[in-house]
Image 1 (cartoon, rainbow, N blue to C red):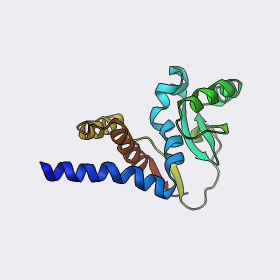
Image 2: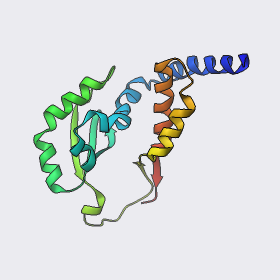
Image 3: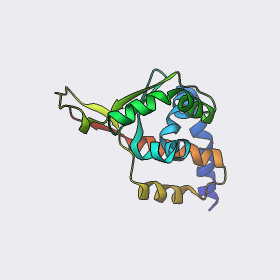
Length: 158
């Protein structure tokens, strides 16, 4: 058991060092919004919209239809404030909204595209159960965020 604790302690020390060394801290903080989206926004917003990507500190939100796009454009300032208040070391500079692909006219795609695809809730719950024995809450949450992003970023052929 001591060997497992030593390995766990090594992992505990490695994740923060790795993210800091690679300059990922701010990106991880911003991308934590993907994991916490349904807890941060109104229930209706969570049902009809989802974070899609972050480009140059701008969060792109995919909305179900044009009505939701218009509604969220009116609510963008308070929504941006809520999201920024939930971040610990980073700050979003803006929000952009786009209608889900099934609502848009088909357009030709070129090459592979990196896309955010949330993992199934039961997979998230299973992984959270696997790491619940990690005593340090910050380390446990960092590990969950790393796992979540590794599962959510999918390459699709265009």
